[in-house]
Length: 72
Image (cartoon, rainbow, N blue to C red):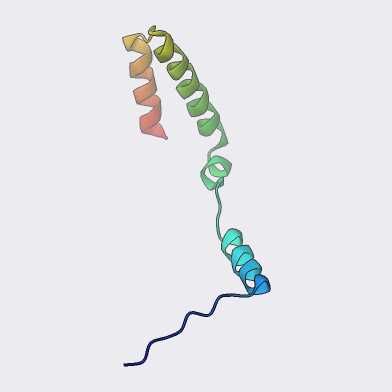
């Protein structure tokens, strides 16, 4: 039974692999496709969390948040 010996990458190979992997990753894809929904959802979540931390969350605001998040 033969086992393979691990050979570490050179710095140039590691950099090339990292560049290749980062080129295929799109972190802001959803935001670019849905900019208005993203801004609205972030503002809504921010206002809900702000009121939730103060203990002033009203049931109607929670219902609006749930309805908006269903559409995203």
